Image 1 (spheres, rainbow, N blue to C red):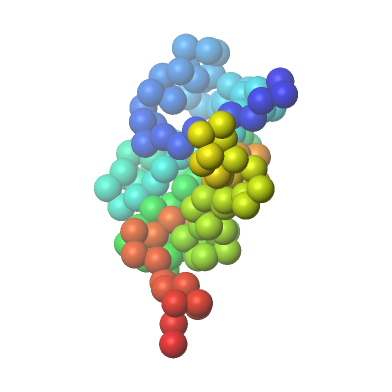
Image 2 (image 1 turned 180 degrees about the vertical axis):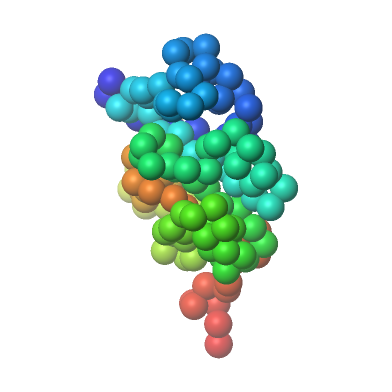
Amino acid sequence: SDVQFWVYTRSFGHVWDWMLDNGAEWSSGWVELPDNFSLYFSVDKYNVDRLKTLGLANNDNGKWQYAFCADTFDEAALLAESIGQNPMLKCPEQTGRYDLVEWSKTTVTERGKRVGRGACASCRWCVDGRGNVQFAVHPEPYKADIG
């Protein structure tokens, strides 16, 4: 219970089958997940219809979140809105708020390599299942990279 797990999946059918195998009914909903587990359905224009068909586009129960993936953040937001969801956070690593890996200048391994902390460990939005997130294949340029 002292370890937090999070999963992104495009395998909506496998999740639905698992729910059915563990007591969920098609009409009544969801099987409880452990408190230390966050589930994200990775949604894009190629699989959004499958999400709808399985009845997983509605998150009224708050048991899962969505990772909306598109070419741009604007397209990811439109995808979220197409299933009635709030797009919420743009991935902070993609917007330049966090480095992919943050290096410590003082902590090194036995071989002299610096120890890094990844953006996900620093942000924790998805790790803790705080809400929907947007990813863009072609994010807008960082403000620091402009002019």
